[in-house]
Length: 137
Picture: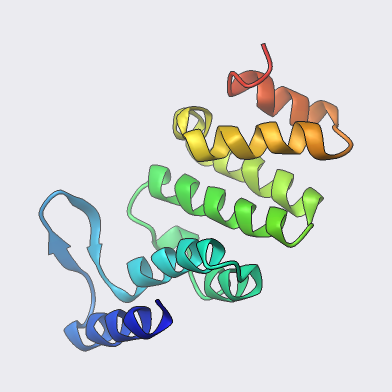
């Protein structure tokens, strides 16, 4: 995965800027490769590498609030895997501020919120997020 991601990053850099792809918001660029790297490193079981990838991106450079929200959701997963609960919740709330509908409807985010509710202390902030997301009814 890392070899292929590094190869994709090199190609994206060589192309210079974003290459628009039909039916793909944001196209193909070094930024989109980094976004995929966050998710890939999480799935590969290396949240420290995912966090390192996340630190290299500028959320403001993303093409839409939905894309920012999704990136923040992936970063929240990273914090959860690192046991950084308060950073996880704070990042989920930032995702919600960006695009509430995206955050509330995304299955991975709802699953993360459910997990947080049963895995440790809850707060009114977390319960509010869970309620707004339809996790707590």
